[in-house]
Image 1 (cartoon, rainbow, N blue to C red):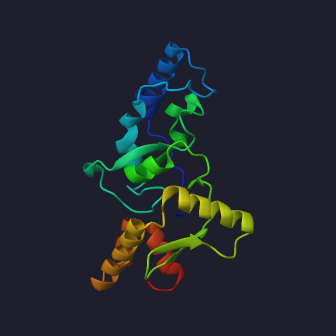
Image 2: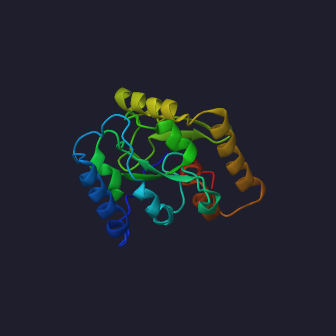
Length: 199
């Protein structure tokens, strides 16, 4: 996981998502700055901006730091502040994080995950030969605890994530791929390989 630079909303967002969403909430009588009522279902207008979200963020999952193809249907809009916690933010571009469906399903409505928009560089470290992810040991203890909680909540260090990171780095080495290709496929792996002087 690495810092993600917040991107400006598309010109069509207000028309396609925000205005429709706020009108829908108003019609249902849901206050904008309050949690949604239990089990309330609202219209998923945010899906209409998923292609824009994918394009603006280079197709890279905000949590895994790995590129995925839009055509494969594995992408989703993560509401960083959950819809259930704040109804009005359900239709706000700045509350959206591009996430693969696995990470989105693991994050769910939890609020103990670090925000890719606000983390500092090099909070997360990577052991390239094993794919193990861990906190930067030089950080304060409270930050380390928050990073461990994010890793645990999202399963960022599970066997599948480790295998994926190891495989991507090995492919880069074995096929003598250019560093820019690694940066496009996984900016997190690229950052760590660069930090470790291995590019």
